[in-house]
Image (cartoon, rainbow, N blue to C red):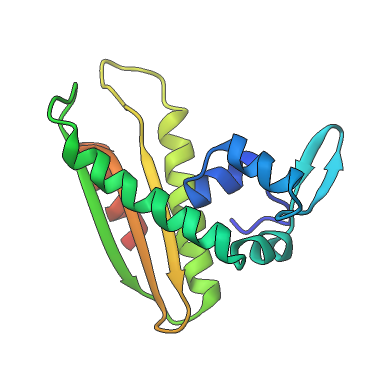
Length: 156
């Protein structure tokens, strides 16, 4: 599911940062792209340059850590939920990208499901790839059944 262009929402999903933060990065020149029909569009190269900025890397690290910390700190949950930290060995940057795309596709498909008495809840997601050791770290938080299904689909 590799794309030619990514939206602000796509980048927010990939990084775990808010769309507001992404817009601030655009305003401050940390992220550049092109506007088409009033919507910002970004290439992989645009996103890569932004993600290589130390300030942005630190923001993403803090956000990922806060996802796990928030999950642990919240004592009362409305549904059974799980926080999964999954380290996945990959062979290349391309394989890591495909894995990330697969997860985003799963998240998007789960949010489009009609409510059939099952709470799909809010799925939280973080993805980090370390190309020095070819390791992708995936953090998925949400209803137990959904997160488990998503992990299994990604392993196929």
